Image (cartoon, rainbow, N blue to C red):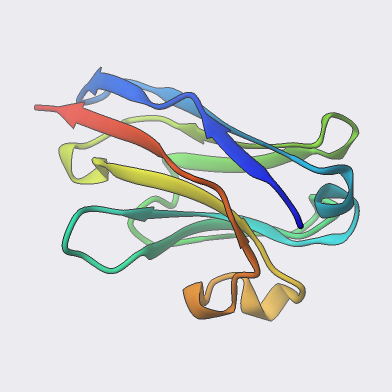
Length: 124
C-alpha cells in the first residue's frame, strides 16, 4: 500500500502564508497524479489543487486560484502546497491524495490513496 503523510499545518492570521508537505512512497511519486483536498467537520471533502506525475500540468479550484501553488519533487517523494493570502474560509483539514488517472484526480471518489491530513486554521 501507498503511505502518504502530510505536515506543515498550523495557525496563521488572515493574509499569511503556509507551505504544506506530503511525503510518500517512491512508487506514488514516480507515476501517479497527486492532489490536495480539504474538509471541515460536517462538510464534504473538496478539491483544492492537482498536479500530474511529472509536474507539468496543474489544476486548481477557483476559490484558491492565484493564491495557492501546487508542486512536487519526485526525487524527494514529496508533494507541496504553497498557500499565500490565506483567508478564514481556508480553514480546514488538508489531505493529499493520489489517483491512477489525471482525469480522476479532482474527483474525491476516485482517489486511490489518502494521507491522514494536517490542520490549517486561519484567524481573522
